[in-house]
Length: 297
Image (cartoon, rainbow, N blue to C red; front, side, top):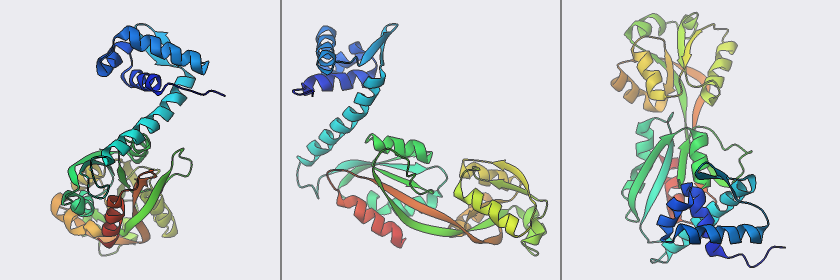
């Protein structure tokens, strides 16, 4: 059993693994490259396994090095989290809150959810990061994001712990420009036969639910395209490439912003919204306050 690990050496390893070279890490650590190199060698000898292999002038993590990096990411993120709490009352200290936002979410809803965080005295800076859900959750796993907002429930195969909260849902409707609206709204949904439809990504819950609904209604539509970016999907609809789905909750915003019209509501098809919060050793009441507000919005 390995005991008496020097955690300074482990911290030097972590810095090298983050910055990709001993030279870069030594500047951060304010140590000579020779000192950092020798201390990592001592750590490898203590562990009995190599952490790096040389690749040209740089270093590449070994398989064991990657595993060690994952653990050190958690270790030193928790240490940083703890140090933040030493600045004062854990219920009152100020901080930057980093929120990951799935790029399929309507920004008007997101802004309503985030309003209490913007006005919260304990938050000095609200940093919003757009991206795909899997990428954002991966960033939360290594403590680079504090909160994630998305449209899909938590994947149970993920290797880290997080809490999934449903914060709302909205029935889905179809929209189109004036030409499509005049042709389709009176005889909806039968009027959709053989008409073009722009959808979110194939694997999205909304796209799958719409496919199922079309089959139930025995409606054959032409799929004009699958678009990950919800704003681009609406812009394509505005240009007349096809009709597109959007939540009823943002009907007025979609019609006003994109110059399109409501055509009809899809029965029993909903967009669900989720917030993911981390399983941290130090609990923060900000998360509970946010969830309660979002669920009432």
